[in-house]
Length: 120
Image (cartoon, one colour):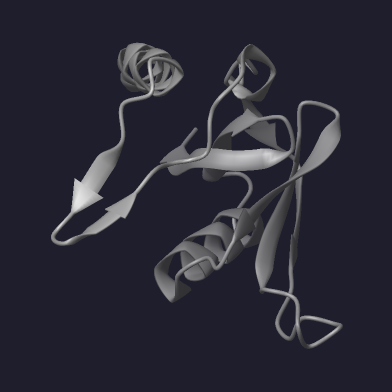
């Protein structure tokens, strides 16, 4: 939670700098980021919950999609795109041994921003 709160002032600072017409340059090529409005700054809170079900896409369909790990937490399905093989194995082991392990998920909307496998 602290990391997210620390990041918000930087986003707001960048937005106010862009409103003043300041452009960023990289080497000899000048670039500017898109202007941010108050509507584009996300204020979705990070929540957490214990995952009770999981769904691992072994091969995405359609094939243009990115593989994802889906966990049911907080009354809805949440996703983590491109999970590493270590994350996949840890989550599968936790659900295979529910008397010993549980999966705690931090999410913003339907996107998983953190997870941990822990003993009960």
